Every structure is written in structure tokens, then in C-alpha cells.
Length: 335
Image (cartoon, rainbow, N blue to C red):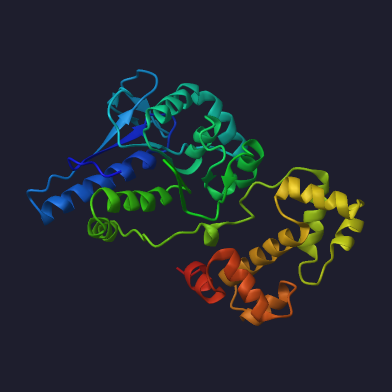
């Protein structure tokens, strides 16, 4: 993506019910970058623009919160990149259900892909790309709370929700909301130059070095499998996190065989029981780091580990931050 004439046109897929920030934040970033480029060189040939592109022939769209924006352009317009916005949803189930109402938009995505237009999606907008079949066999990411449902509905996609941005060929996907801003800074560095991208990030107080969603993932907010065996296992693990546990012990408590338990966890959690137990221990450590003044050794003990060094490595692998860095970033501060 490096327009020879200095012009870069970003298409924003017009979708009723989309989140306003999916449009306004992106538009602001390009406008600020354009202004900075002109201040740096009044004779610059760089021309950054964003346009709404619709699949239904409408003149305007109504975003979440009843904000009406337009005008909506024809999809025949030449585009250097099309971005699919995120849309508001009440639950993971609601996010998946709403995909069904975007049939014309999904057909347009397929048509634009055939035309060779690069595509990107922000947040749950990745569900439209997946529904269109455009992510099959590709690496992708999405909002971390959609992880389980996304994998279940689109098993051909190689999903990694720990990554903030994934580019695979001519398709890019990003995590929630602000993640798309980091991706657009990368695009800006390519179509203009890295210095302009860096200065735009500074003006907007954006951190272009964020690459992982891991520090922000919360199992407490993520959708959990609704299954009697899952609930029985989850309750037991939460109660017994403070001590060593075995798969055999968990299987006995759940009244099932170890083989059945392993199969169930792979199907519903995409992880082994012990790997899920580690996730839960990291979650408890995160909560204690955020809300208490306990030492790390005390936290490790409450999470069922005896080796602080091993747990520190596990914590950093899971969150991409050291425990000390995590506490500094996320601890609750008195008002």
C-alpha cells in the first residue's frame, strides 16, 4: 500500500449500529496526520482521506446512540483499504446474531476482496470477515472476549486474541476499539513515512508499541461455557486454587473419566485442564496485584504455587508484563 501519487483513500464500511468511535477516531487520525504533513512541508503531495462506503445505496447511516452520519459513497469508488468497524453488542451471543443482519455488507466484502482491495476489521467487525469466509486458513485476531465463540463458529480461522494486530496477506484484523489506531499508525508509516506516524501518535497520545491484548484479558468478563460439567469443574478449581491439583482429582470430583475431562476442556476451553488452571491462577494473581498490597511471594502462595520464580515466568508469559509492571499499570488508586 504505497500510492504513487501520494493519495491514500481509506474506505469505512457504512453499517447501521456501528460504534461511532470506529469512524470518528479513524477520521481524526487521518486528518491530524494530514495537517502535520502540511505543516512539515506545505508543498506535500500527500493526500489522506476517508470515505464512507455502503452496500445498500443509502445516503446516511445511523450509528449506535442514534448518531446519523454521511454521505455514504458507492462501493465502486477506488479504495486503497477498506475498514470494517466494530458494532455495539450486549453479549457475545448478540454479537454473533447481529452478523446475520449484515448480509449485504458481507457480500460487498467478498466482492471487494475479489477486486483486490485490501481489507481490515476492527473489534467484532472481524466476525463479518469470518462470515464471508475471507479469514479461512488465515491468522487473525479480534476482541479478546469473543475468543471462545469465534473459535467455535469459525474453526478454520487461526485465531490469536493475545495479539493486538494481525496482518495476513491483504487482510488485517485488530482487537477492540483503540487497537485499530495502532494498526493505522503502521499503515501511515508505510504510505507516508515512519516520522509522520510517530508524530501523529504523539499528538494523539497513542502508544504505537502496544502489541498484545494479554494484559487486558479478563476471564471474569469473558464468556464462559454454559455446561454442567464446566460449571462443576470451574467451581472446584476456583475453590482449590490455593493448593496443588491433579487431573485425576478434578475428574473424580466431576464424576467423569480423565479422557472425557480432557476432551471436554479441549472442546469448551481450547486448553487442557491444567492449562486452564494456570489461567485461573494468573487471573487471581492479577486481581490481588490490582487490589491489595500483598507481596508477590504472598500472592504466589495464595495462587497455589510454591516457586515464585516459576510463577513470575508464567505470569509474564500470560500477560506480557512482569508482576511489578502489571501492578504499576493496573492497581487501583485512591481518588
